[in-house]
Each structure stands twice: as C-alpha cells, then as structure tokens.
Length: 200
Picture 1 (cartoon, rainbow, N blue to C red):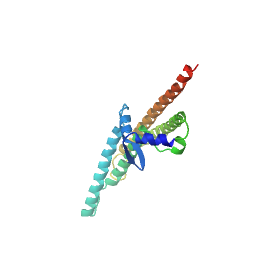
Picture 2: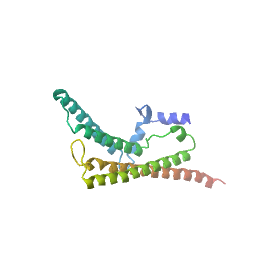
Picture 3: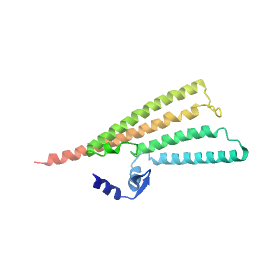
C-alpha cells in the first residue's frame, strides 16, 4: 500500500495544504470534470476573505483615530465567517477533501473504499438536507415575525436565508460525490466480471 501511495504522490506536481500533500495537477484536472466547477466556491471564498480583511482593517483604523468603531462590523463579520465556512465546506465535499479517518479508509480493497466513500457522502447529504430544512424554517419564522438584528436593526432573515441556501448546495455536492463513487464502484465490479467471463 505504501509504495503505491508514494508513486501516486510523485506522479504529479504537489502543494502542501495543512501538512497534507495534495496533487495539484490532479485537482485541476478533476475540477474540469464538474458541471459546476468547485472554483465557484473558491472565488466566493476569496471575495468573502477580501471583505473580511477590508472590514476589519477599516474598523481598526477608525477605532485607533476616533476611539469608536463601526456598529455593524462585528455583526457583518460573523455573518461572513459563517458564509466562508459553508462555502469552504462545499468545495471540500465536491473535491472529496472532507475530514475522515484515513486509517480505516485506506485499508482494504478499492471496492471497500468506494463503499465507505458512498456511505460518507450519503451521511453528509442527509445532515445538510436536514440543516437546510431547519434553516429554512428559522428563516421563515424570522421573516414572519419581523425580527431584526441586534447590531444594526436590519431584518434577521437577510442573514439566516443563506444557511438553507448554502446547506442545500453542500447537500447537492455530496449527492454528486456519492453518484461518482457509485459509478466508480460499478466500473470496478464490471472490470472484475470481464476477466471471469473470458476465463475457460
């Protein structure tokens, strides 16, 4: 198992993310296979990060020179951080980079790995579908009762509406990942069946 993993890692250019070696060229090739590329989430994440840095920097400058701060910055920054976490989670699910216990995943046959990947993707999809439904109920309640945010008094549903939207996006990414693993599992079974049929 170890020589195969090392050969796979050495086959393409690599970069290091969070101490994990990720094949960069393989990721770029994989991104081209999606109907909706995960680069969409990447760009949204970049925009959110730029907004967070700009808002924080402006708040620090204003507080330094005036001893006051913008009332809306903390509230909006928390909202942007939640959006960033969900968008990054969507990209991770799409690229199959979500957290898992590799000790169990990498031990066993390729078919077993695919079955575990299918189970994992299904669990992610179920969880985020539930989160989307519950988030939609919360958003509807906030809209119905006219709740406003504590910081600047805007309607609370302006913030909460993105929870069901982004959760549904992650669920769709997880279902697409599950479908890819199901196809790969069928291809593995078909590849094993073909030599058996040719055997005398």
